[in-house]
Image (cartoon, rainbow, N blue to C red):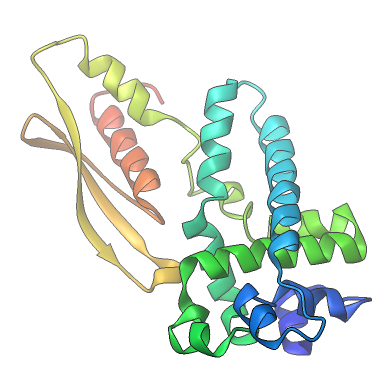
Length: 226
């Protein structure tokens, strides 16, 4: 547990909360003996995460409409993102799983890892309050948007689409041309094509970012101010 606390950059006053957050229902049902699953903590963590991310986006992007804010929040807290953070923390090593779930690869199952991330966040919130929970979210979920190279929040795709639509006979498409790196640190390359001609290429940590970067390059080559 101490090693996990170091990775979390948070030391629990009540370490039982962390153990509870790592207890999968398969283990609780198998062992019983007072063990409770982390499902209630997962429920709370989901809400805490949503509030922190929503608050960040609301203040960070004052001009974005509600629909765009909702889309961004969903992309940041999706299962794929949360399970990647769990893998980075190696939470799977510390999970308490039933024998069947353990043998069946539960320590690497995306849904279990994503749920565990939310449960651990709830444990931090209950143990130390909102500020430690916010710090934890900033260390993982909200770190990428603050990086200069990540421009996923600038919607170059929509701008490019609006320009292309001026000529009804033209069509634009995005094609994934390369994917490399481990699951927790992948790199994607995407080409944006006007009809069959490549007009821009972009790279990113996910497909959406790569598409935006491809659209940005296309706009730049077209002489658009971006």
